[in-house]
Length: 216
Image (cartoon, rainbow, N blue to C red):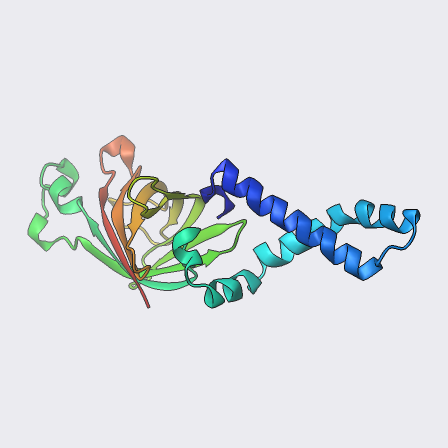
């Protein structure tokens, strides 16, 4: 999540954390001699690392966001939790022109894939898992890039994921990769965007579509 910050903001955050670490060591050691003062300085980097880890990788940062909800807008929203998700695929449009579906009526093909996102987020990591309601497939992100649009102020997620289907249909495959780009609504309770995959790409069966998720 720290990647959302521009260089100036990130430098300010690091500077503030360093000052807090230095002050913490000074209070803890309360130097009265030169050697004790040097010990304050020498141990500050370790304290800085510990404070950064505690604030960034534990639920403590969520407490801070809870006390100051404005941080959701100023920095990045807390997306942790479950999101009811609907994925709409273009598979019926593709099937209408593909030989592998010659004996299938495109009108009978289900283009809606309901399921749930589970988002795990801290200052150093953002991970998304998708589970289809019918248990047909699951997806796990490999890379997630959070961003804030400098003009609109809207937050976005761009990510690459790996999908696994344990018992694929003849026109499907067990593993494929995909990418998506979603925009988070200003109320931070929903997101929507688009996705595309390399699913069975050599046979021309790769798909694309839309994503909409609402916080549970």
